[in-house]
Image (cartoon, rainbow, N blue to C red; front, side, top):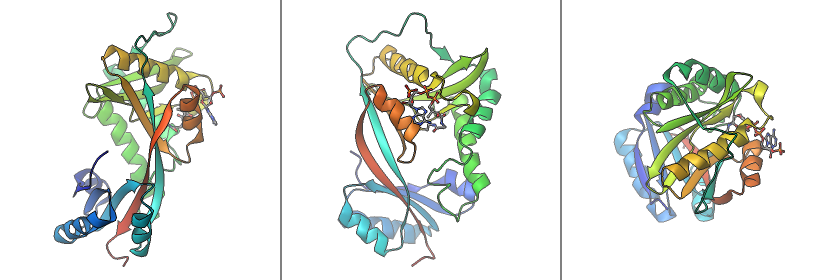
Length: 243
Ligand SMILES: CC(C)(COP(=O)(O)OP(=O)(O)OC[C@H]1O[C@@H](n2cnc3c(N)ncnc32)[C@H](O)[C@@H]1OP(=O)(O)O)[C@@H](O)C(=O)NCCC(=O)NCCS
């Protein structure tokens, strides 16, 4: 469980043009640390996360005009000792020339998606969409992913799942999408099973993945695969001129 932390967010700042910080707050008593940092650094836009059971902290944030933007649910799969992928299925890692198709899928699958960026009316919607494209592109270049698995149907790439090793024991799937016209045909389930297999091949024991509380398709998929919900977080935004 991470402790309280706060840092500048150069990526958000470059994307939206506001001096931005990101924080995680564990307890109400830690909150002055965040306020002092924001004051010292002249922060205009603060993205703050906390555990959902910290109700005293949530009420204090509400009094300070923090606005709730999303609720994140984290799911975990603990791999069995032996993990076998069905023989007729095969893991496909991404190739460099697949980037354009990955970006096309990202654009279509996340159009109108309710992320914490999209939920904030003060942020430009196009720039919020670009955040996902940027994320996918940097994953293709292996800057923020160790591998990307792809799923094909009708001879075409129609889905992908990025993978990152958080530690020797834990793999995370940060970005996951199926092109809208190919959804509901089992490609998402195939990629999740491929991710479990990849995790197993890395010698790791746990696979984790998260989504917004509004994303019922992902949650249904993951629970149907035996994944367990183990962590829930609120995301708040605060603008410095909203006292
Ligand atoms: C979520 C997503 C990846 C699922 O992929 P998919 O290929 O459509 O899913 P599958 O066809 O493999 O479905 C597997 C299971 O997921 C669940 N599911 C899929 N689509 C669903 C929907 N629209 N509503 C509710 N449950 C759904 C069901 O449990 C389904 O099993 P069933 O068909 O036996 O009922 C896909 O819908 C998607 O890309 N959505 C937009 C982007 C996104 O939300 N990405 C994930 C962010 S974490």
